[in-house]
Length: 450
Image 1: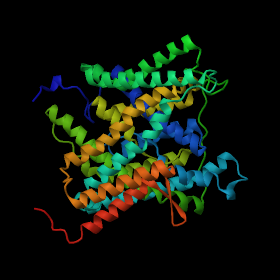
Image 2: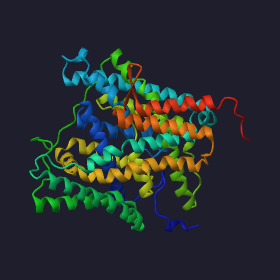
Image 3: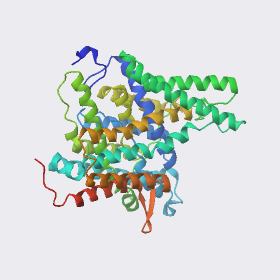
Image 4: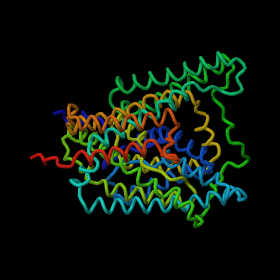
């Protein structure tokens, strides 16, 4: 076994030095920012409020889970359709934006109570019962679907160039140059950097892509980097906070989605358990019991929804992108995530800081996303390998096959919402539910292994 001093990485209860802490925190912010902001833009929520809410909800999650689970809370794509249905409903058409957000907030807050209730129930029934309902074939399959379902989004981002470009062919080609430089530099940094630097491949990859975008902009005149996304005369401005307004329609539309996100949270917990304990083993430290904290994780997730929903942020979940960043950098420090949450809240209040983050070219984000989203999918495979899933079993093959096809087919063919029996069913949530039901049906009469 390697000596502890030679093994790079930080376990959940370890804290880096201050400068390193800030750099690692910035790396976590970089990977969560695009998706969190995108949810705000799609749903019509205030961007600065959404950013602030993600940081505050993360702190709430970490405190409620007693600093035992290293996860970052960000806006969830699973809720987009439900929230958008409320924001665009004819019944609320005459209301102002803030009034419609307030109505959606009520459904988001109530969905938090669903997650809390599920967490308490899971804590009572124990891991053995949960494993019967959510075996590695389901959780691993869902992790694969989540990662691969984002593949189109990553590739689309990699090809984005400024709308003001005159020569669109040149601009499109340069966007791919920027994305590919970002992708391969990040991979090279993650594989070949040693020591402390090995824990910052994503930040270094982003900076490399950013510099290339600036150089290309100077040579070609294509404005890949722009600092005036948000026009404001104020340097400091608090986000717009709104309070929830009771609505049965919001509860019916948004609240049930919380149930469908449970398999996703389960997959995240199993992923963390594998990677954290792999590092703990290398460092000669005792095992971290993370996989048995699914119930606590769901309670924390629910608290995150309540905190975010109460001030005007969208519903969320712990982010696979941040888990990928932690797995790549081998940095699972709770202190880093808390620092990231606080810095995020500060950024949301300063227009210049938000503009700096927005100045990152979409092509750079696309290059990073190709790697990060792929790692999420790969973690699903890791779950099944770690749990020694028998892939020659007809039962396991059937469950995994159905999850993959429903989840990915529904995502790519129907834009995430499967039209069935006159209603729209969210692809990933439907894949999870079908996988769970199929597993339970195929387990009838199955003998318990010794």
